[in-house]
Length: 240
Image (tube, rainbow, N blue to C red):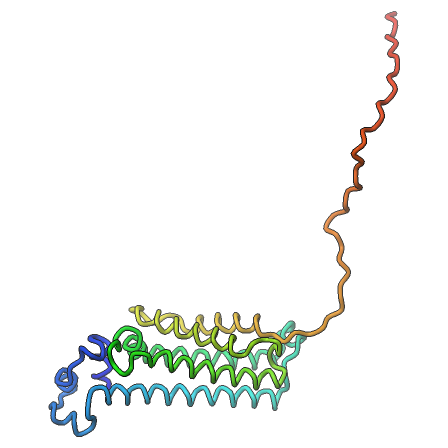
């Protein structure tokens, strides 16, 4: 499977040859068919492995969020403002799972490359978008659960938020394909969470604060011209 992933990434699904895959891992072409009926079947197995890990991680993420809410309660506006231990724990949990997601994407960036650029004319041609739609529905479903718990803004459109998040990860995965060196994924995870944190904070009613002008307003001036001052007669001083 490792040899196949490398071959698929280099030549695409249509250009990859079974004999090149088996040669790269020291097997005969006949041995290949003892395990897979075609290279497409092998690629499907690679995808299944990736999706299984992704779905398992997403399940653990939601379980961790709900467990945190049960054990520590919902971080309120004061927690966010003062960066309390409860809030820091909640925030760090989100970062840890974002980092795990990015690590998984980095390890499977070759698969993303095949789905984006190397699957044309095959049954997998539109699979990336089907996978994307499935992830959007999953994130939207989990987001609604957090809305019900009061952890995020209840007025937000869950599916639109999910599209924003999944779309960001898809573009990051595409960016990874072209990187020669591994980026600072920890910094990426922190940035993603900062964006989400600011946009999904629950809205709380706050007392209105009286507005104070930055500077005193000048009194309105009349359009009428002021009357001319009476001229005073100037009497020159006499010289001594």
